[in-house]
Amino acid sequence: MQKIISAFILGVFILIPSVSFAHGNNESKPAILVVSFGTSLPDARQAINNLVYNVKNEFPGSEVRLAFTSNIIRRKILKEHGESIPNPSQALAQLNDEGYTHVTIVPTHMIPGEEFDEVCEVASAFGSMSGKFGFESVNVCSPFLNGVKGCESVAEILMKRFESQLKDKETGIILMGHGTPEHFANAQYLQLQLALNQRAYGRFFIGTVESAPSINDVMAELKRNPGIKKLILSPLMIVAGDHAQNDLAGKDDPDSWLNILKSNGWKNIDTYLVGLGEDKNMAHELLRKIHALNESEDSK
Image 1: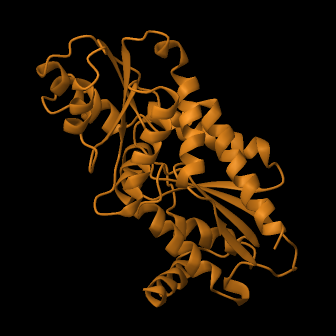
Image 2: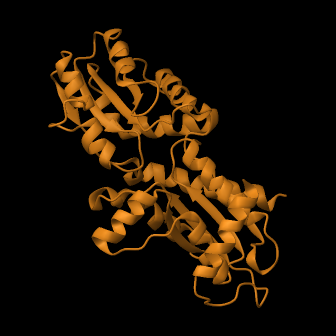
């Protein structure tokens, strides 16, 4: 697999026009590559833009670029809006060609699932390359929900995010994550649920679109908490994109969580369709992770 990825990356270099011939002057040039799954919804894009904006402000000495991991979304944006957004391989190849030497890759994914694994494979392939087609260093930040510490941090952010709603003891917060089938990283949602239960037991209910816990699991937990009379639906995702607009809160979709809950007896339901990427505390957490990675690398 490593050889295949490396061969693909070399092919990418051939397709990109030469700009500066990398490392010709041996000058250190740092860059930060923010990597998102992506979204084709203009309003939802604000969440990603907010994270990129904060990274640029925090690290003015580094070139900050953006890449999307979803080829479907990238092609849709190009077709509908004429904007070309690179995938991680293309973005790294371009940075190398422009002479950048040290790259920090910053995924905005919630869990270290399949998408994150693929980003790490690309980073490893570039990091293993030497000479003019390689970088001096390529490092990858961990996702938001990465182990106990990461889940504790996000739990604190969610407590602040829904502080006013939690004042009403009869209100429950239902959070929809994406989920990743047959991957150990999906357990991070359970770790986050534990962290939230320790802070506000019986007030947060986490489910996923594509794995477990499901909406059925969420409803089972709601029945164990009869004191909850009002529900708030919100995405546990960086962007409030298609999943949030349709799978979570689609009024015309009988299979949306909104309609499933209504058909099972819950009538008092509101939605908060704002991506986590728009939350200032999530942006601060992302910056903290970058600083922590840099400090770890400097100490080596």
